[in-house]
Length: 347
Ligand code: CUA
Image (tube, rainbow, N blue to C red; front, side, top):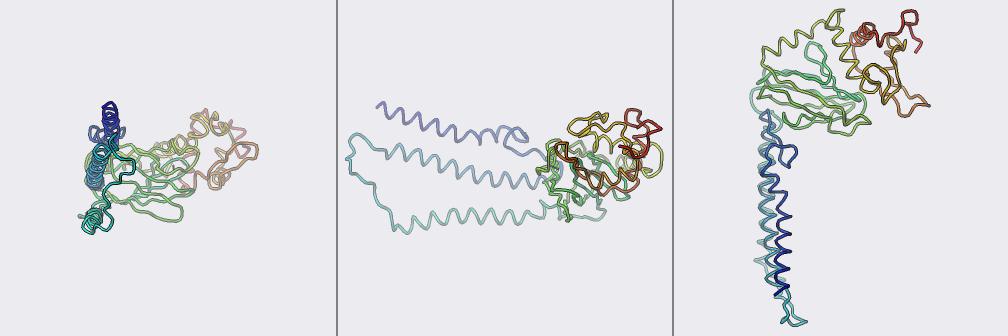
């Protein structure tokens, strides 16, 4: 009798543990902390979530069915004190009907999953619906920041602004290693790979601020390579782009681009004031304002033998005006600019 109770308690504990992930997933929908995917701000993201729940539902039913049967059978057909030592269960080898049933059920399940997934692929890739009026934005993955280029050449780093309810095509490229653009609550992820242009189509449906990450291990600062997407009204989008105009002429726009280039590229490794952090101090270095030396450094990177690690070629793909903007910002910042008499290529 005591053994029966132990068996029942053990079975109950096993079932409770097995069901825990399912319960967690069900009670925390939309939570990244849970097992459920977050709510999505685009139809393609929603299509991905629907597929997730469809496959999850089938798996949950199969899992619970198998586990319950397993535990019931363990209890029902366990060895009892009266069982003869050489007792054997009924032999079912060659039971054609049983074998057909247990082949057919999984086959049907797999075919149903395959058909539903294939039918939903256009929605997942956002290739369905009207895509005229498409906004094309270039997305560059760099060690360790995201560089966005809007249709007329305006640049922003790490933060992307998109208009709501308009089809968007992101063209993803990389200048160094593999990165992966992933804004969890907007749509699926897409890799940025050197030597290749990958596309990610979406149509943001809900205005708001969406946080994302690089989802491919890309080096020492991979974990702090976040990105933000601001989905705004069409009118607000136009005015935000207008604010970026003039990055290629001296003025506020140029300084703003220079500041972004400093803060989101150089400062991540060299410290906010160039005082040194993960990488050596560079404040007041002459190289910072020497266009030719700086260009070469940002294009080629630098591997100094006595310094651990190496500097990636962070400025690959920058047009000349972005370099000029960076230099203009450094000259305007008294913590960073080298002393006047020294300016010109000593660092
Ligand atoms: Cu870029 Cu990880």
